Image (cartoon, rainbow over all chains, first blue to last red):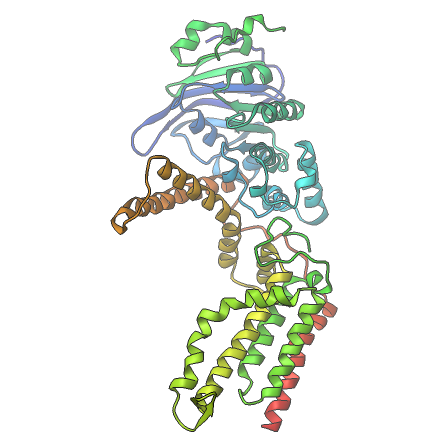
Length: 255
Length: 256
């Protein structure tokens, strides 16, 4: 494994030796090791069925590994810590209609911090701050159903930002977005002062947003390198069913 | 009360009126209490029903609901009162002749009883619906201590009905695109299968929504965010309607 990234800042995420087998016997994680430093933006790449989403569900204790450990900002992911862990890990799921379950945008953004015990003016301030960060302040009283897909995805990001997470985990953030929404989301994500882990098939998006990428296949991390270098490794990409869009050559891009 | 801005249901009339500004829970209580008073009034106190009608129409005028709007929506009760119109024809006892028809007095009174109470009840519900968005109705029920499970189900329904309708629409388009155009009952099979798969999709969505809720710290209890509530003055002004109706009912009772 090419450990091309020097890790010196405190760790936001530390996964070591994580294994998980689904009840039907399918081994989804076969020993995952991953460290992400505070403030890093990392893309998690890999073919369908590689175990990416399974890994994500371990980060906040929705699934529990049979071996190995996960730490978020130093705090082990164990049932006693779930309340704090779920504050620290903000997962943005792929379908915003799953994430936005309350009747209005503001109520949805308030759901997380309210579960942490915030009320009144403090809660309202959190909601405003999160909606402001994704540029959706003027939609606070709207029903999610009346927003465009891109707007719903931005609100979904706000729902977890409102919990002031240590690490933001996005599952396929660019899927189903038109090019303008895709770019707007990228601008928003780049401006957020949090650690970011982004599960994606969208390799140009990974290159645009993340200096570092890790590739997962068959339940483990098979490559970990600067995104530019990784995307130039055609053999590696081919081995793990990753493909660049037609005509896209990362080497030619400005640094 | 603009919390439900995005949930203007088809019966909601967006107006600026003192009735629209009242908190939802006082409007619910006033509407239900008014209807109860109307229903328990003896059917032969004709003048009392005149007073009730004036009261509710007065509220509708305050809420700036056009009478025509109210009248056309009140037609929803027609299927329910149709059989009341048969009562004078089939009723027994003393009979009167009107336009050559022999009508039962008992039946006439019975029909009047159903028709007037039904109409006043429907109008009162329409006034409530026209002045309160769906989201506020749920908030009102919650403040009235309606069981939390019911409130949660209603809240999710409010959010996901539109999502479901969309999904059903996409499935219909997919069926039509593959040449499905049922003309006979036995072709409805595919429709039934569609309903089944819609149910499965909703079930799976339910699981994903639950995961998303857990990820944001859900522990089995919805956080109670709503701290607002109606003031004594708001209660007093809303309850004017049922209290006035109750005074009418009491007078009718004393006279009867």
